[in-house]
Structure formats: C-alpha cells, structure tokens
Image 1: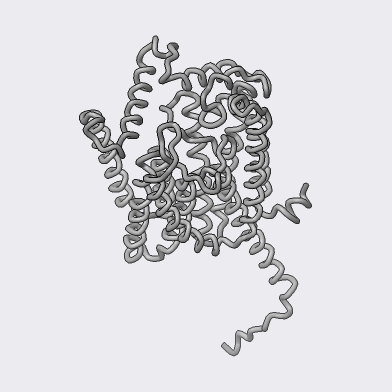
Image 2: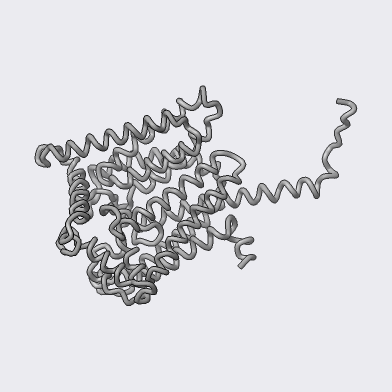
Amino acid sequence: MKNLFQRYLKGDPILWIVFIMLCVVSAIEMYSASSTLAYKASNHTAPMLRHVGFLAGGALIAFGVHLISYRYIRLMAYAGLILSFFMLIYVLFKGQSENDATRWLVIFGVQFQPSELAKLSVVIVAADLISRIKNTKTDEWIYFRNILIMLAMICPLILFENFSTAFILFVVVFIMMFIGRISLKKLFLLAGSLVFVLMLGFAVVKVVPKESMPKAFDRAYTWVARIDRFKTEKNDEKAKYEITDENRQVQHGRIAIARGGILGVMPGNSVERDFLPQAYSDFIYAIIVEEMGMIGGIFVIGLYLILLFRAGRIATKCSSVFPAIVVIGLSLMIVIQTFINMSVATSLIPVTGQPLPLISRGGTSILITCIYFGIIFGITRQMKEEQEYVPELSEDKEDDLPVVEFENL
C-alpha cells in the first residue's frame, strides 16, 4: 500500500484513503437507494452502473489533475470563470428544468450544471486575488473590490434558481477572505449588507403576491414557503407526524433515520428508499443511517471531518499563500455542503436541494468534487517534492556549491 501511494497516488495518503472510502460508501449506498430509478428503467443495474461510471471517471480526473501544477490551475480558473458566467446566463433562458428549477444544460445527452464549474472557478480565483495582497494599505481594497465584483457577477445568476448554492459560495469566499486577513471592518460591512438584502427580500416576498412579481422570482416564493413550513412543523405537534405531499420527503427521511438505530438494517435492506422521492440524492444520508445505523452515519461524518482537519494542516505547511487558501476554500466547499445536506436529512434546516458530495447521484457534482480532491492532492504532491528537494540539495550537493570567503566581503 505504501509503495502504491509513493509510486502512483502522490500527495497526502490520508486524503487519498478518505477519497477512496467515500467512493466505496457511495457505490454501496447508491445500489440500495436507486431502487425507484431501477424500477423506472426496468433494469436493476443501470442506475448503479451509471453512478459507478461517474465515480470511476471522477477518480481518473482526480488522478490526472493531481499531476498538474497549481500554477496552471490558477490560470485555468480564470478561463473557467468566464465560461461559467456565460453558461449561467444561457441556462436561465435555455436550461432544462427539473424539480421546478432550471439549473441544467444538456451537453451531448449529459446533464451539466454550470453552477458547479462556477463554484470551482470562483474559489480558485478568489484565492489568487487574496494571495496578491502584499500591502494591506495599498493592495487590500483593490483585490477586495475585485472579489466583490466577481461575486456580484456570479452569485446572482446562481441565486435565481439555487439560493443555497449561491449562499454556500458566498460563505466560503467570505471565510477565505477572513483567513486571508482582509480587514474585519470590510468583512463586517459586507456581512451586514448581505443580511439587510436578505431580510428586505424576505419581506418583499411576504408582502407582494406571487402573481405581481416577474416569473424570474418564482423560486423566491418556494424558499419562503419551505421556511414557513419548517417553522410550522417545529411549533405544531400534529404537523410533526402528519405526512402530506409537501413534507413527504422530510417525514420519510425522519422515519429512515429512526429505523436505523445503532447498527442499522444493513446495506440493501432499506424500506424508506421506496418512499423517499430523492433517496439517491438530497436524502441519501437518511438511507445511510437507516442501513448503517448511527455508527455508519458517524463514520461518514468522520471522513469529511478528516478532510477538513487535514486541509487545515496542509494549509499551515504551504510555502505560499495561494495554495494554502485554495486548499481551505475547496475543503470548506465540500464540508459545508456536506453538513447542509445532512442537516436537511435530519430535519435541522429546511430542504435546500444540496447533494452529499461524492456520494449522492449526480454526474456534474461528482466530477467537479473529484477535481476539488485532485487539486488538493496536487498541492500536497508539490509540497512533498519541494521538501524532498531541499534536503537533497543540502546533503548530496553540498560539496558542489561555491565556497564564500567571508573575509573578502
């Protein structure tokens, strides 16, 4: 195993193990959770094989990306940002709708979410801009302004159809700026402005009838309805146990978690997979807990926490700012999305539509998440190569270095 990591899977071996374990859990649980898809397709292996195909393709992409220098990743991110900007505009007018949201483009018969490419590009470009701040008095405002312009271009385009994704992206970049030591005054003003806009938007949606608003704001009424329904279920004892068309996912998610207990019913024995409409996507964590119990649920949480912990350790050892901020930003994007998905499955927050990274069904999400991992692997690979080069230079080539006569200086 050690030779495998040293020869082929370069970079942090613990993160490679986390990545492989998540892929294994994903394959096992997707086989169970995709029963409704198998029934529709009249083929019990088709959804599973499709998912495994994306995992295998994503693993190959992660391997290829981890061999690319992060200096080239920095340049490619700007091209990805421009491309995603135009794709997000196009998807608003010509995108494919699913579950009352227009988020997908169909490319060669494959659904693609431009917002996933946008998230990746924004995080890397934001890290690049933060790393360019050398003097807080002269540089900070310039690059802080550039980050705000980038967020103002991308986030509203995502916001119209996917509020939670836009919010997660903003929060991740905000934390990156905090870690990058952007002044607290600027960050507080930014956070306060965002809270004010959200409260104002919520008030407008509550007051103005849906019929009087442009169609582009239809999703806003869906968000408010989910929040109201969530508040009602928390305050009304009867609503907690009543199953309706509106809360069917939430209620069956609760039942799945309750059935899991400590050890679960074992993989393949889930009952709620046949009742949860999004058992293979938004609520796959409920199926994981049902089949693997509380122990399995904690194990999956532990994998993501190891990712976040290792990313923090890696960031502290980076020799420059850019790779450190990139590692933190990409790991935060994965982990925050993870805990939002788990919070929805456990009824801690309203339904958001966020998949569980690398485990939920979804081609675009899997491939982009694998790129996240690949970039992190690549940064750790370069760090190891730099550390190996310095000792080699100091020990093996010491005699070849010119001798400086201090008396002649």
